Length: 222
Image (cartoon, rainbow, N blue to C red; front, side, top):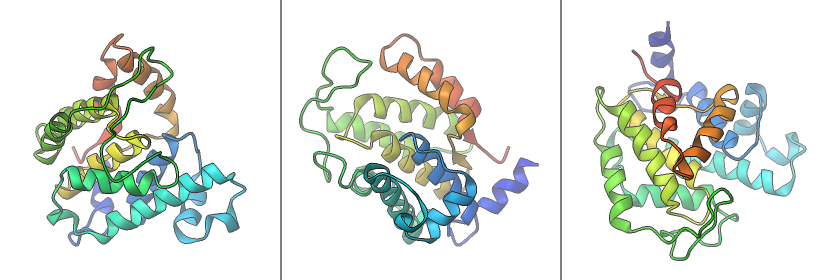
């Protein structure tokens, strides 16, 4: 049954289908605490959000940025796109526009996450690039494990001032879509557990989120 669904998600011209865009939009918006149903997502993708949603300005910015990131992803030739630091920074510049202190480069100053007692220092570019290279070289045998690990390592590094989870999810999905392996999707039903496990991962209590992402959040044709 699922093999048929994935076939619908992708086509040989690498144009994103409506269903794919809905999945990607849901994932990015859930990560910011914005929960729209499928009909609302379709409206968001087709129309001016200020005309159709009673959203505050901050949520409106997030929704606009997600739509712009989807438009950018659709504008590139995914199966020819190089998955690299430049693409990662581009996604962040789009997704964190008018939210982050700075975009267009990796973070250069410490930041704070509420569940971590100490400031997080700027990460080393080589560490970020190392994880991106792993994402870029996924195959049908290892992609679930590699995406799960690299996604979590990158967001714990906090490479950017804002939009780290959204930017990393878009990067991971660009790599998965490039090789037509499926999608990395966070839906409302598994969001709560994802957030709890992510806190445990940030605080180094356990790494249970890795298996959870691999088993529950990365959809494949298999």
